Length: 278
Image 1 (tube, one colour):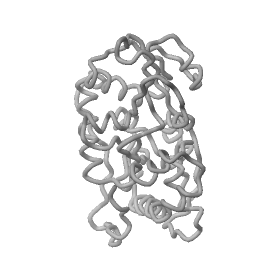
Image 2: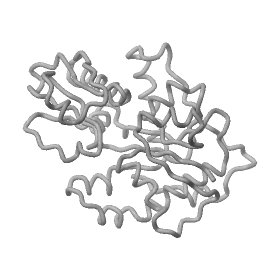
Image 3: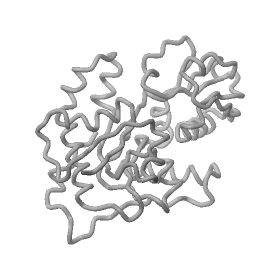
């Protein structure tokens, strides 16, 4: 039995949606657990799970402790689950309210505000704050993350972090990688995750239709959310790693700790198991 941790968000839930069909054949049995994205790395390193969907930033900052599996990744051209709300537009953005647990989104917000709009607001931390608490603050802007963000109705200017990253880097933002503890990767885990992704892709349209969501969110799940680990993901990760160095988050461009399948154990069905490109 392999214990897999995914985030308690709808995009992550889509990844394991193929399990509900009952006809996906996996090399190993899976036990799926849900947790907030900021807790995924800790659960993995503590040994609570064997594999976890971990925010890309956490993988790169802990590349001596984990390996990313070259199976699937969670990426997208847009991301309605993470938005910056600008109360006064770009007239004044001196402060940004945010939940510091979501360090990856906070970093992306910093990058896009500075690179796209020449704004360098002071982050104001509200750990564990709800969407309404962040919206109700006095800061010039706030960063909202979570399942309730797509339904947000506000007259203020909002920025979709995924779209902003795409316009900056020309690649989809890689929100999360599937990681294991250092040295614990194996071909069966890679094959299992690929088959899970393939099963989800096969049911993408049906899954989206059975969920109550807005037309915009329906379009996101049909056309934006990506599961494939491909050249676009690698290019985006390269850009992301360089920005970590440029913004002095790391002393050098961090390595991507990618598990490599031994040549004598390469899966002959690899091409068959890969998911379609979006």
